[in-house]
Amino acid sequence: MAWYRNHYHCGDCATDWEDEWSCCCDDECPVCGSGDWSPTESEDLTFLIEEVDEAFLVYESPISAADKPNYTAVGIALGRGAAQAYVKWRMATYWDALPHY
Image 1 (cartoon, one colour):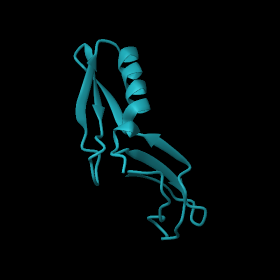
Image 2 (spheres, helix red, strand yellow):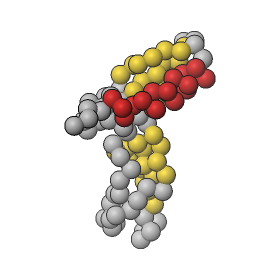
Image 3 (tube, rainbow, N blue to C red):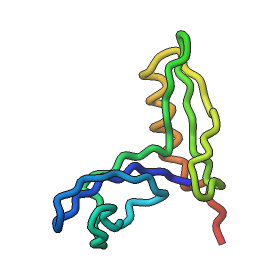
Image 4 (cartoon, rainbow, N blue to C red):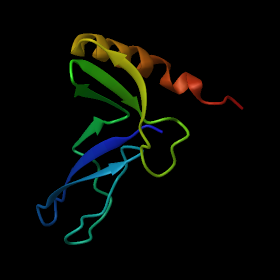
């Protein structure tokens, strides 16, 4: 499942907060409770790259994940650029893996 870190700002009490969700959805302010605040920014965390020793591991939140990303290793690269290229390719095919009804 896709995973995002959403950043929010409450126009009522000026609170800034972030929360992770499987979509870029509206949220309620954790301080004053006012609702329907849309993200001011969202970071796509569906894929992560982690440097380990002299390699770069690529992790993916599988489409079958439910309420958390449940990352699994899907690739390894010798350079960050190669890992980023792999992520770009996987992002282009990620949603094609969904079952079509």
